[in-house]
Image 1 (cartoon, helix red, strand yellow):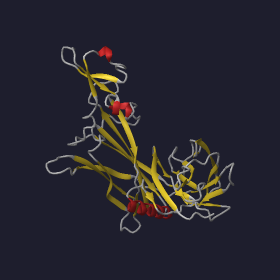
Image 2: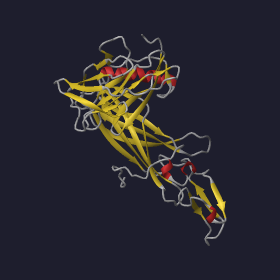
Image 3: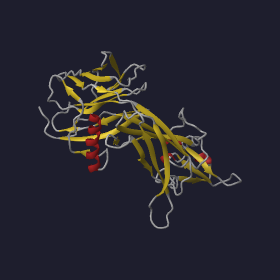
Image 4: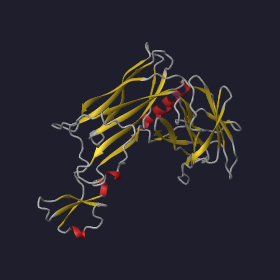
Length: 374
């Protein structure tokens, strides 16, 4: 029953203030292989466990969810916290649950398949290590190479951190970015916000350093090819403490992903996690159950950057002499330009590609935490 080959496709999925590492693996002959993506932190609302099935190499099955499972988190004091299925394959605890620094946690899963055998899976106990605060996040304008005579600026973001208590030596980071953008036309839905999550592996081992300090860590580069920097940009950095075993897991995954190009590429290897099957320890289980303390820090950027791409230079528009012939006027089409006397011709912009409606790409709902003063 042992799979003979594996192809692992891995991708980062971030939620607000937390991170779930989503795997969509492909296997040759075990389409029911369990994939565990779990995280406990010391912040309320950050605990989640996702259970899914591997994807077959033939492509006849997809990474479907493991539903109706029994999922329990147990600490080293014997406290048991059941998780309920919030949505298909996503299990979360009561809203009041938070991890405690210094405590150990173990994940137990009992599957509930109607067509195949049911198994019990357990993770190794993992201790929550304290994590220091991020010292500072900062950015630098950098010239973007587009050829001779082209002056365009991108943005490199860095951060510094250190642990004066010298308790955390293995770190992982992820981030979520949100930016405000504005259409160049006076239309009802003109200003919107968009968000995205990081999709690369950022880890660091400071145990071999003379001082537990991280200076000038290059987090991400924002290209002028998009509109993230056009109005106002915000980044929320999450810093996680991880165990040495988990660091080695991420290090192996990062090495494979770096070799093939990115986290979204196919990786030709099986990387074991920290979850095993009780009834059959020879079963392969993918993914990892992470127990991490987390600290977060937010930054804003509202500077002017030269040479940002104009995403609306090719917006489709129609010229009409009579607005009565325009269907869905002010719903999916808007008058964007007319002469001073308000006589024909009129220029009508369509909703295609979000040119006249920012909600095609983003949302009009300003984030509750958005700071207009920065």
